[in-house]
Image (tube, rainbow, N blue to C red; front, side):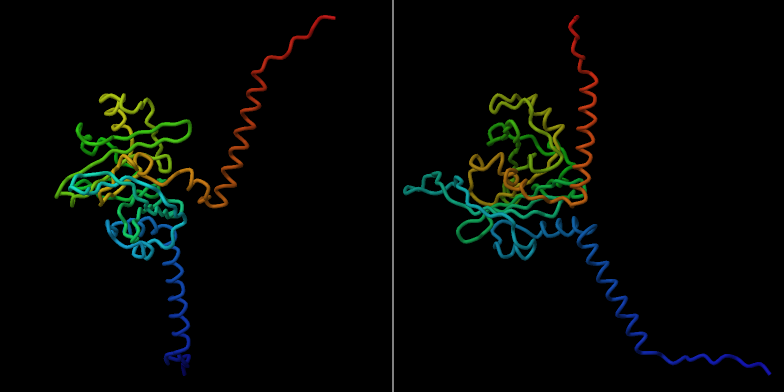
Length: 289
């Protein structure tokens, strides 16, 4: 007589609950890792597309959290005089900057009512290549070249360029009327972004059309400033297209392991360079006795 083993087919509710709890916890860990790592660039780009001029500062905080820097800056703004003539007046704006991890920066310019008058997005990593709108055009920060946008109109303000001993910036203005919602855009290259492409040879008004065209063909857009007010861009650009590099560079955003590895590589390169210099250095001649 054959005896078969007894199989318990009753559902163990406690075992099932433990398995579901473990799966839910694992799913939460994976989702948190995705949001903090691979999915973060996409989330930041999605949050940026939800922004617009005249939104409240609290709304921006709900998208990006607390800013790391905040300071006051005076700019020129167009206004109406006593006889309805257009005048320039100096106003103070609150500038706030968010470090987007190791990927880039977001900066806003707010008035006394904490309404965002303009804001900028800057990429500083090859892993952060958001696709943003400049009027009817779509550009990818860090990839799209300036030449893909229409050339600045000769009668329009700009382009603005600055090149110093250690700082540089370039910005050009674009306006598309009703097609662009009557907004102004400033696209450019900043020392706070990446890739770096200094406007070498720029001498302000002396930069000729050929030199400008050559630079626009080689430079990739790393920063975009959206302007929705009557601010005179001459008082902001070119450095206002991105955060102040002297301010944000003091915050170390890289992973400690990357910092240690970069320091070690620099030490090795420096040691190799010193050995090469020592070998090429001529030996002192010995004087005859």
